[in-house]
Image (cartoon, rainbow, N blue to C red):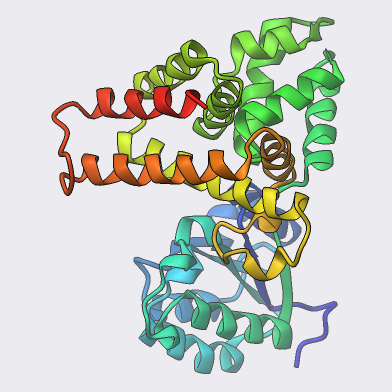
Length: 344
């Protein structure tokens, strides 16, 4: 068994693809001499590489680096036969001159959509790779940022560019696009260019530069629904459609948010709310901002409002699918739903 100070297998797993890639790059930089990168680094995709190729690369000695590194991306999609061969073959060939990095991006690989036979799904792959990494190396996790970490990252990126960012602006960025590391870096980069050297990023700048995510628009729409602001609610819906969000996806997001609001209402009314919460979507498993928003909105929706909302959403779903009162204009049907939700 390789000591932790001399890892031969790295498993980098998590739900943030940017952080997964960055952690992989750090491992590569630790061992690879840049002058010999083309000789000593082999990157491959699990969906396109068989066990023979992976084992052959892992068994080679470095040409001019301290270790030869083999990176296997999309590792959760390793076929069953390849996984079995790696489970048996890697421990036999790995020595002190080679490192294998399995990058298991849980978002890209969509483990929730695994087949019924779990022995052949991502869960089985993760189990085998975790066992290999724990016995011959290390497991590193690249989970999504927490809200305070995202704020700190935005402040640091702005500071490095010689720009100040107001606290209200960092909060607005996170509200509009969420906690995806790649998106946050892209949007703060745009804001830095917008503010210019020595400038300041304000909440107004964020509203002018950063496009809202679909999730943010749903929050905004339901805020308008709760306040009976039909014009704002419909305009927000039209904005989503203008950004080519499919009608059924918008309806699904509306339904999902109302289910989170229902759970928040259960919490606020007391009782054993935890036992009545579904596995998906589960309010307490959501991002901090999503939880906070659902709990705030729950204070504005009472049980009769929620019962009526679920009934209207079901009727709209049946109409869009042509099961009952089939619609000929999906946009009009969705607008009618939003208008009806505003009439409380």
